[in-house]
Image 1 (cartoon, rainbow, N blue to C red):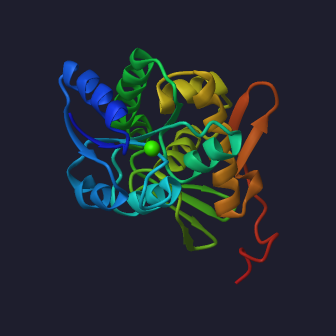
Image 2 (image 1 turned 90 degrees about the horizontal axis):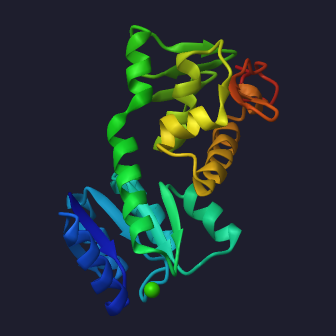
Length: 236
Ligand code: CA
């Protein structure tokens, strides 16, 4: 696989390039945000440091996400929960805090690549014959990867859509957190567990339908039946 490594620190970059090369990856290193934007189109996955000389890493992350859907892992010294949540909301698939263990980072890369390549929710969508799922005034087209609320398109991140599509594929079933984490994230590590909460919150906020994802306390989630037109969005 071809990696884009966005890292301004020479020693850190060299250690990562060596470790990636040992696992058979090719690497292009960008020391500045400007170069990352120039080269991201060729990347099959991205490792992103947030402390860069020419642009804040979170802002770069948002810009990368507008042009690139490749798996992306933030690798940074910023360890505040606020930073981690912002990074995941901006579209990172995982978040690793420095100093990290190299083997753990390499395992996380494998996990992120596996789950983004697996496309499990699409397979579930195919089982339904490609028909959109309706609940309340929400339509979820699993095959087409689109969501509308009261006829208006809602833009979810890829991971948010994967979670929603997974629930929508079997709307009558309650899914445990572990099952969702395993199917969508590929693991049930603590970081991914926090990530699930962030993504569910994102789905609720962006659709304006808090009941679209029903929390089953102490267990997991289920596709819910949102009331129509409670916040003005549903009124025509
Ligand atoms: Ca840095």
